[in-house]
Image: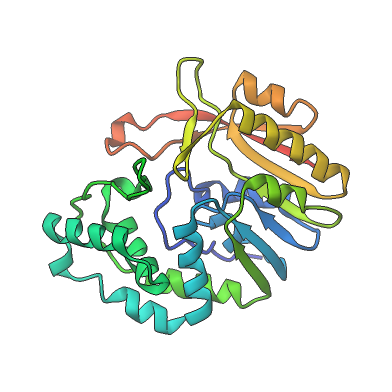
Length: 274
């Protein structure tokens, strides 16, 4: 039987897992509630079928966007689409809308502008300065497309069961996972080298202690009866953190660089507790 095509996320997201779904999804089969601790573009969640899901991310703007789309559906889609026009695809308009986003407090407006920025900013990056202001520069794309069908598919997934979007610390989410849950974690990765820095995540550095806490909580959730799957770079540190898990290693092509020739293959690790 021919496999149905995967649902594509409607957001750009560095480190998104759409290209790795064939590797990840088989490890997430079975169980009851699906739990995702670091949602990002939610590519994995979109392609699961659990009737109940808890989807978390530490980025409040991201979760607010998902909430608006889930709650309002076509009304929100139509509103968000109004920001996608030729007049707004200039550096001047981008800077004005970026300022409007940083000043916005109304959830619907801020969510629609977050989507606009995601599609028009450089490389789809999500970055905030020390004051919490989004500060990614203009991306200079010919004509960013409004992701109409992908947004409809996302909302349809939220209507296939009970999906709850939350903005919490990953520790709280993992602490609540237990028997029958299937948990996927795609945290900021361990650095590939000893001289590289730990990754910024939702405005804060996700450091070695965070990596150790995640590994400890993953083991604890598994001990309570959950299946837990985690992605990371395949490094000595990651292998040490997940030494008691079933480890799967493969190479992936990183797509964050704007220079296609500079995009290199790096070792990826899946740690599976089942």
